[in-house]
Length: 289
Ligand SMILES: C[S@@+](CC[C@H](N)C(=O)[O-])C[C@H]1O[C@@H](n2cnc3c(N)ncnc32)[C@H](O)[C@@H]1O
Image (cartoon, rainbow, N blue to C red; front, side):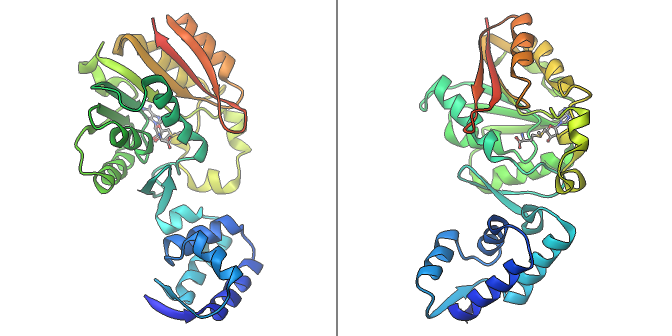
């Protein structure tokens, strides 16, 4: 820990922000690498006196900020971590940075199963950093979970994140294409969750440069209409779900009705589009009979 005066820190902060970038990313950097939380930063604004302790020197923090501004690399990749729900997760450019809107998937599970559910078997398809599965495994220690990804590098990060977040052993990771690694679990799953790649080809091309340049295309592109992977997941889901097992999918803001139709046509009941906090139909859920 290094000690510097609050006055010096605030003047350095003003200079960094005048170079560009958004305050949220700057606060993220100061919290993750500098060790000064957002609430502490706000307090300093109200009472800008005395000294403060910081984990890294200002030159080092400034060089990361400069790198972020010059290269547009997401600050989470430069810091190597992100926060999601109450988890602190390692992220590299091998995994999508889990988005805040996806956090609601866990609340949908709470809504369906309650918070004190007994033993149950769940799977996540396309786990990336492991965020969803880890949150569920921690929230439900009696549940057993399995999670896949086609990318072995992503699975290594997910595994590391699980080990770092918990001493539990109720989550296992498998590498492979969607349902392929789960052959031996046919008819056994009570719940399947997936936030698959669902961006339509033409929309992908219009995504911000920092997303296209740094986040894995494999995690985002869902074929020409965005539904390529969602179709495959839904069509095979009846083979793997138990009777009355649930499928919860995240989709693009305008895909809800199509996903609903796919679920209904494949034998699902209680099919529903669930809105995210901005009122967008971000999730589609259904029960297999
Ligand atoms: C939108 S990301 C979601 C990651 C994470 N679950 C989250 O919500 O942040 C989709 C994930 O699906 C994986 N994926 C893409 N194609 C796949 C496939 N054919 N089989 C299994 N996983 C796949 C990607 O590697 C990526 O990690």
